[in-house]
Length: 493
Image (cartoon, rainbow, N blue to C red; front, side, top):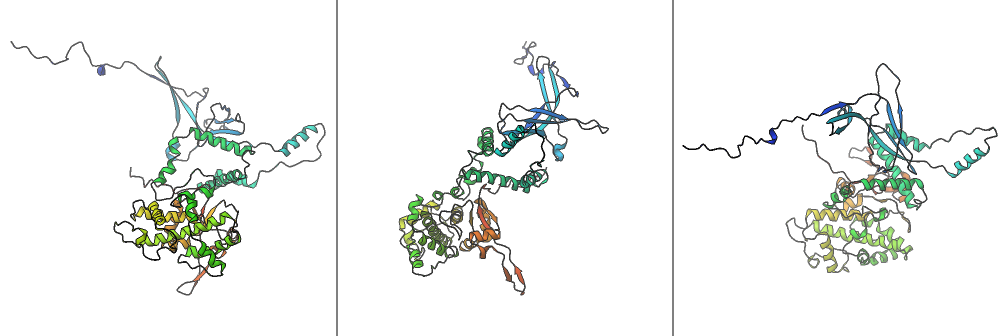
């Protein structure tokens, strides 16, 4: 007889663990009695809460109107030396989140009991505590001293400033754009205090900065380099995102090549400009941007020959002319993938001055065009570098020693020199972090752009008089905002 084969591992005593019946049951208890205090699920957007902060709870039960309504909870803390924290129940107008409720579940493995209790979702906000001034202290002391005597004169309570009232109304009922404008004004006011070196003596500013530092400690370190990483792959000059002075946001070391920047600027030939202005002659230039600015800077340099800042501005203008001449030459090269010829083979009058050595010009081209190929990326980098350099040229009424809190330039001349449409120049300036805005009449007079910035009238082809819109100026100021990367249109669900 032939024995029947038996399947391997088919023992009657062995059973698979997956087929064992699950006999454990979990008992779920829903705690919804009004006598049970509901826990709180709180979040603090933009605020780093200290670990030792404690809150006082306040509740308000609404008047009965036929239906049962839950009480409103408010948490307040003044344990921080200079900052008050206030937590209110979160409310939303979104249809998706309107019916979402928060719950907290606690599981006890010893009894297999799962307790579920509804929770209140709250948002924690911070505000700087208004410290009493010296006058208020003196008045309170005088009031304590004269408690026994009846007061014959009544003093009306101090009214809050109009700006704070408008800010409160904007925060409560304003649009997103108006709220953003109020936040920018407050941030600029704080930066202005910092510039005046009063930050150490101002407890309000110190409290705000300490809160920002606490928030940074809890932030994700990968998010701090998001802006720098997004700009690294763009044809833009390198910006110093940690700069506290707007004049150093685009340092000369990232705009002037070959380095060091001071050595390169010292090689810029400005003696020809100085000699022509000294002899009463005009300076001719094929570039509108240079022709409209060179005479004023040279006159300022002749009036202040020992001022290094004026000399640096004039050298920067001469370097911009060299970059414009390089841009014109490279733009006329054939579009084929051919390397840029060495400076010895350039046509005559490619640059307006022959005092610059061929080795210097070769290094300059190599810094902007590393492969010496006129690629689109490198051409765009040359354009954005020129536009960033124009921010370092002061307005016509700039005086030596005057510190500018805003870098500003008028882009119409440089757009014609680069043969670009105004829309393209506007896009490049926005990529550099500038804002394109019109100037008020007072600002036009202060900067010396009365003829350029005011609205002009023009007669069209039909003989009608048309008023042209006011010119827009590129401004670089804190806080610097770059264009946001579009996430694209959402896909169909």
